[in-house]
Length: 329
Image (cartoon, rainbow, N blue to C red):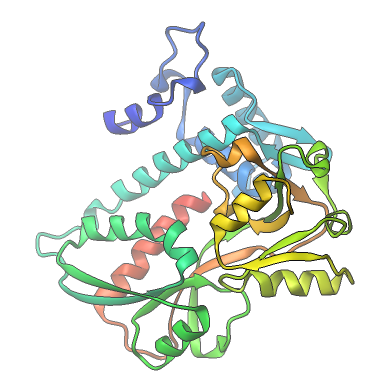
């Protein structure tokens, strides 16, 4: 392992047993453990991770147990219905993703050329995706191809689709649930985010390991009107014949966080918006939903049938690399 990767993990000393002065990354950690850990965190179960990795459940269980023993920390809360990351587990997840992303990027060295690509890219994004997915992808692309000029257009999903189909955008990155004209575009899935219920730390639902939609419907809701998230949840409530009281509809995620943190309401939101290693964890907790709820998917879109330029194809390929590293396939 390179010194840079080594130091990036060692930077968070809270992961290590304080009574084990000889603990080092080279001796106790493997990439396999990172991969297995991330697979369990994505699947929320050992069985699901084993299917994802195409290996025996016993191998996953053993790897996770060895990892927790080495760290001296519980990375998951276990129940009959699955496994949920603890607070240390969330922080370790962030570090593990950085390691695998760095390894994936190192594997791209052979694609870097003395003569890097030049030209321009026009990419459409929604405000929600811009804040939570864009920076890492752009940074990776710019390191490989610094001569490419990128212009970003931020707007609503429907208008971005219109610009894309009209040829005014090369690519768009947005939530791909319920596209306006799915036959007119091609979609490269980048990430899939589980929906869970958000609540204040002292909320009655916080005392439970998970909650049903019927239980959630008994409390006031905040609806996030951004990137079709509300449309997805509206369909879910309707399918379950539930009509929760909506306290507020807003496009401001900060307003959602503030109101949930005070206990004024709850919300069902995708995991990619939750930041447990920040102050969110002091005021907001999340719980799994007992009922099946569609995930919120973020994808890269381009117009079907368009003649893609080399610079566009390269951006798509780098986005794929980043997606693979995050999904631990």
